[in-house]
Image 1 (tube, rainbow, N blue to C red):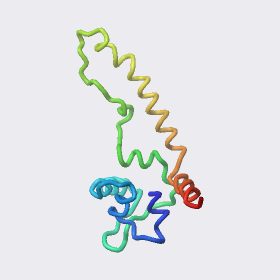
Image 2 (cartoon, rainbow, N blue to C red):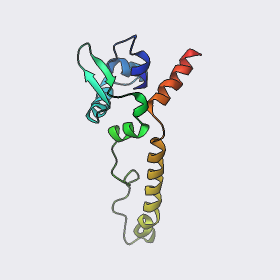
Image 3 (cartoon, one colour):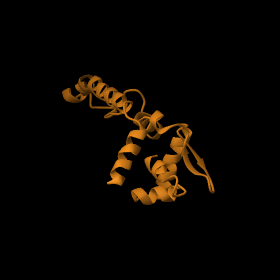
Image 4 (cartoon, rainbow, N blue to C red):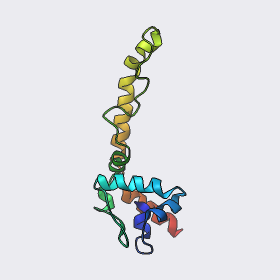
Length: 131
């Protein structure tokens, strides 16, 4: 989204353009763009339209993008070892020891992501490009 904003007046922003910027396959970019579009964060117009945010970048948080691209159920970011060995004293107790701590870590990370917006990235990138 930062690249879209930085180059919007110079180039038609396509999945191929974005893929070239981050050196990845355009198919991966198209998947991400579909997720962002489905979340209502961008519009994608085929042909000459390109990609555009649906609202000001200051109103799109890191959390919005995270939620759109990699939705995680409440507290499931660190979901692991669904069936530890009940015969092992560590295995049968590991979830009672770790689950609440890992949920708290996820909650803290998600709250921190809500503090930053995509315009923060755009303005930071603009400053770097002006040097």
